Length: 271
Image 1: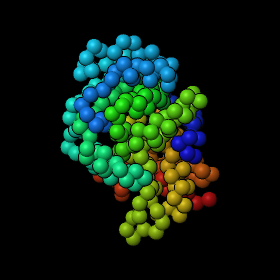
Image 2: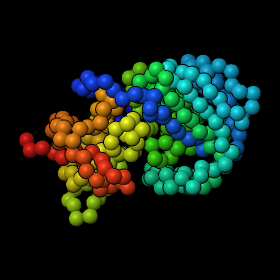
Image 3: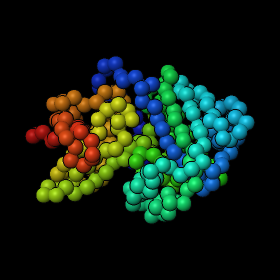
Image 4: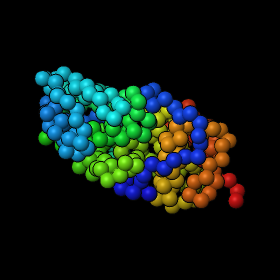
C-alpha cells in the first residue's frame, strides 16, 4: 500500500471502540515569521474541503476555535520556535528531505493545531486534523508540517492529504504515523517499528529480525496499524493476527527500538 492508495478497512473485532474524545489529534505548522492569515485558512478550507469554519478572530494572535464534522478544532499562533529544539530533532528523521534541517533551524514561529472529537470517530477526527493541516500548508509563510515524529515539506504533506478529496475512506496514514526500519545488532534481517499509534490509544508495533523485503515490512506495519485503528482496540497479548497472508502472534514486551516500556511485537507463527 502507498500514501495514495491506502484506504481505511474495517477490522473483524466488533467490541466497543475506544472513546475518540480521549485521543485528540495535534500537529504543528512551522512558519518563517511569527504571523499568519486566518482569512486565508478560511478560504482554503472552503476550496479544499467545502468546510465552512465561520468567521476567524479579529486578531491573528487570538486562537481560532470552530467545529467541523463532529470535532472541535483549535488553531493558535505561537510566536517562537518549537520549544526544546524538538523540530530540529524531528528533522533528523527526514532522510527524503535534506532541507528539513535548515528549515527547522530557521523557523521563527509555528501554528499549533488540536482537533478534539466530540461526536467523530477516531478515524473521522484524524481525517479532519489532516484536512486542517493540509489547508494551512497554503499559508504564504508555511515552511514545514511537524507530524508523525518528522517534518514534511508543505507540498508533500498537502499532496498526500488531498487524496481524501476523492474518497471518503482514504486515510493517508503516513501523514500521522512514522514507520521506521533499522538493523538490530546481532540479529539477522531488518526490524521495523511504528511511532504515533499511541495517538489512537493503542500500543506501538514492531517486528524484529524479519526476512521480508523493506517494502514488505513497511506494508506489514501499515496493515497492523490500520487494523488496530479501525477496530479501536490494541492487540491483546497472545492474539493471533493475519497480515499479508501470514499469521502472527502479538506479544507484549519491552521495546527493542524505542525508549518506551512496552510495544506489541509481531512474531511469525509456523505455517
